Length: 156
Image (tube, rainbow, N blue to C red; front, side, top):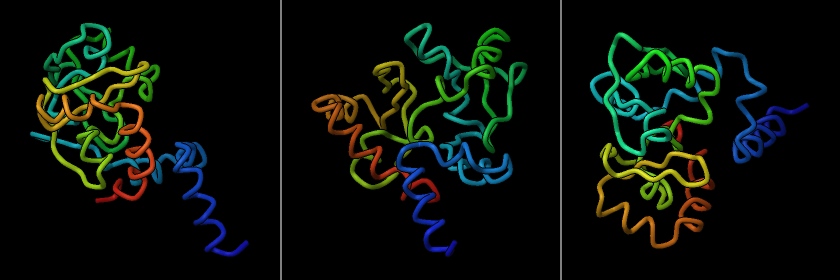
C-alpha cells in the first residue's frame, strides 16, 4: 500500500474520530497532545467531570491528578478521577479543550472555564461568555464546522 493511500485513509478516520483506535499508545499521545494547557494542566486544571455532573467549573487538585494523552488532568475528587479514567472520551472537552467557536472558524483560542456548554453529553469550551453566546446561535452548524476543522488544527 502506498504511503499516500495510508495517510488519506488515516485522515478519513481522523475526521470520523476513529484514527486513534488504530494507533499505538505512543502515537495516540503524540497525535492528541494538542490539549489546551494552562499552568501545565489540561483545561487550566479544571475537573472535566464536574462540568457534566455539577454543571459548573470546579478546580481540580494535584492530589487527584491523572496523565492522559500527553496532558496532566486534575480532578476535584478521587471519584471524579475514577469516572474519567473509566471513560475519558466521554468527559474530555471537544477540540482539545480549545474554544469550540474558534475551531469552527478555523483557528484555536484559549478558553474561559465559565464559558462552557454540555451538548448531547459532550463538553464544549469557549473563549469567553460573549463568544459562547455567539457559538450558541447555531450550535449544530458550529459543531459540524469544528468537527471538520479540528483534524487540521490538532497539531498547531
